[in-house]
Image 1 (spheres, rainbow, N blue to C red):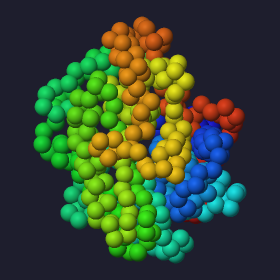
Image 2: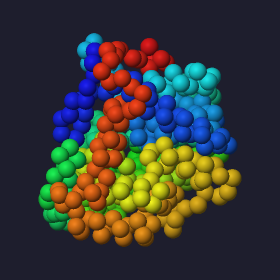
Image 3: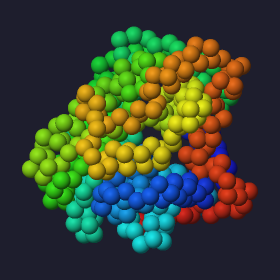
Image 4: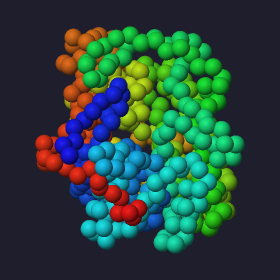
Amino acid sequence: MIIEPRMRGFICLTAHPEGCAQNVKNQIEYVKSKGKIDGAKKVLVIGASTGFGLASRITSAFGCDAATIGVFFEKEPSEGKTATPGYYNSAALEIEAAKVGLYAKSINGDAFSNEIKQQTIDLIKKDLGQVDLVIYSLASPVRMHPTTGVLHRSTLKPIGGKFTNKTVDFHTGNVTEVSIEPANQEDIDNTVVVMGGEDWSMWMNALKDAGVLANDAMTLAYSYIGPEVTEPVYRKGTIGRAKDHLEATAFEITKQLEDVNCKAYVSVNKALVTQASSAIPVIPLYISLLYKTMKAEGIHEGCIEQIQRLYSNRLFSGNAIPTDDKGRIRIDDWEMRDDVQAQVSKLWEVATTENLSEIGDLAGYKQDFLNLFGFGFDGVDYLADTSELVFVPSMK
């Protein structure tokens, strides 16, 4: 079939298997170009199919020569219907890993569930024995709690009052004003249950109790802080409460796993185009202005550049892992530079529909968004007949 992007609001309903494969190959080539990293050798990535999770799996495998197990929740392809992009990404990663003799297997299912945790533990026992690095990079709007059976939904809302500011429809380039009603306590509580640290802690304790967590292992989850302009809807909103909980959980996990000397960290990463960030009001406009500024400074990074730097310059540099006064790894350091933020703030004040294409990088934003679904890559013939029936090898 000829596979074209079909948009509905902030999501694309189709994905291109060859484009997704090209995306993975490009990331692999970048990691290889930066040289080997003396890091973890048996890695579990929970939330491994897109964004920072995918970049973590690629960097582990092709930077550290690690065996990797990836856990994700993606839709498989069927006759006439494409898979979700994360499924095709994972298929491509396994195929590329096999070419160079690297172990890579995947598990597709609800990572919040006890069943998927047990399936993962069984696979580790069977094939790897233990893991020495666990990346926790889940991004889900809902969570079925494995103990209570209650379905919780996260929300993107400010706390304490209505929030009004600029935003952009990245499809049209129209800059408008958006208002978001404040969260109630139930919204906050549900968002913390979905996006906080409870499930991360459950994973780590399950791995330890099963004996599949190596002594001196490390675990890492990802967070975001961002600038003042996005604070009301992000860091000081419902998501921010969840991130506060996630960051506090890192200290709890380190304490809980003292007997195996497992250290838990949170890495604060850069703002990037993801399916999740595209749906958050204000964020697309901020990212468009940020991209323009960071590219002009020569310090722009995508997911793979960010994670490769995290691994080589923070986690496995041979030195003590540097953290801020709250114990967080700051790989958002270039984004949050005073000169970068001053320039973005200046552009924010004057941004309009008419000038955004000049003062912002809306084209770069759109390109990155299409890339998420396997579209817009050089070397891929998007007019060619393409089979949608591409499957993850380890799950056939």
